[in-house]
Image (cartoon, rainbow over all chains, first blue to last red):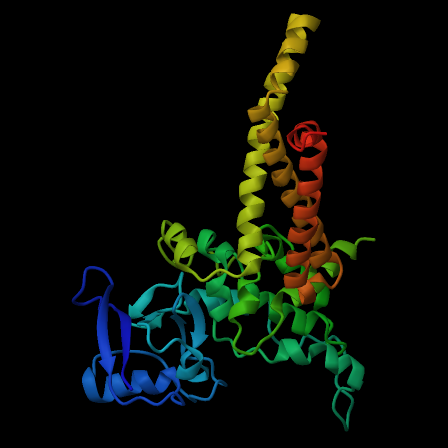
Length: 236
Length: 141
C-alpha cells in the first residue's frame, strides 16, 4: 500500500523559513517502522532529506521527531500503529533551533543535562577489591529512571519548556533523581540545591506530556514528584 | 543554580502559542489548560464579587436591591456555571496535591476521570438545590 507524508523541510542556506513538502511512498508494509519510510525517501526519492539516526533500535535516542503532533522515536514507531490512510505529518522536535530539516540543535538540552552533574559524586574511596555495594531493593528504585536514553522527546514536549527557555526540563530532572536517590552517591543535596529554584523543578506543572511521549515509558512526573517531596521535607 | 546553560538560544518564544495549539493533548494537558482558564475566571469573578459587595457602602437598601437582582434566573444560571468553575479548579487542585505528595503521578488519568465524575455529580446536585423551586413547579408539585 501507499502512504502520504508531509515533512517539514528547512535548509538555512536556501530557505527563508521552514515549509512542508509532500511525499508519497509506495509499496510500504504495515510492519515497517517510520524510520524505514524516511530511509525509503532519502535513498530513493530525495537524498537531501536530513534526519538523525544511529542504532535504529530505540537505544541511542537520536531519531526523536514530532509525528502527527506528538514526539516519537522514528525507529520505535510502526506504521500499523498509525492511521495509514491519513497523511502523516513529520516535524523536528519542538522548541529547539532547526539545523536542517529534522535535525535540531540539542546544545541547550545537553547543557541543561550537564548542569545537574550527571555522574557519581562520592566522598568516600571505593572498597579496595570490590565494587561499591548496593542492595537489590536500592537498585530497583533507580531502574526506571536509568532507562532514559536522552532522546529529548520529553523536554521538548513540555509546555513549560516552550514558554521558558531556561527551564531545566524533565530529562535533567529525571537524571537528578537517578543520582539523588542512589545510595552510593553523596552529591544528593548539591544537586537538589541546583534544581530548587523557579527555573528548576518548580517550573514542572504536572502536565504529563513527558510521560505521554517517553519512548521508554518512564513515569517522569512520578520521579519529579519524589524530588519535590525530598526538597520540601529537607528542612524539616 | 549554576547558570552556564542559561541564555542558549532555543527557539523563538513567540512560537509557544502555536506549539500549544498543535501539540497532541492528553488528559494531563487538558487538566492543566482547564486549571489555568478556571483560575483566570476565578480571578475575574473575585473582582466582580468585590464590586457587588461595594454597594454595602451605600447602605442596606442599595445592597439588598443588588442582592435581589442576583436571584433572577439568568444570573442564577451564571452562578451555577460559576460553581462548575470552582469545582473543577478545586478538585483538580486536590489532584495536583495527590500527584505531588502522594503517588498520584501513577494514577493521574484515573484521578482526572474521578475529578470530572465527582464534579459533575456535585454540579447536578447543586443545580437541583438552586433550581428545586422551578423544577418542582415544572412537574406541577
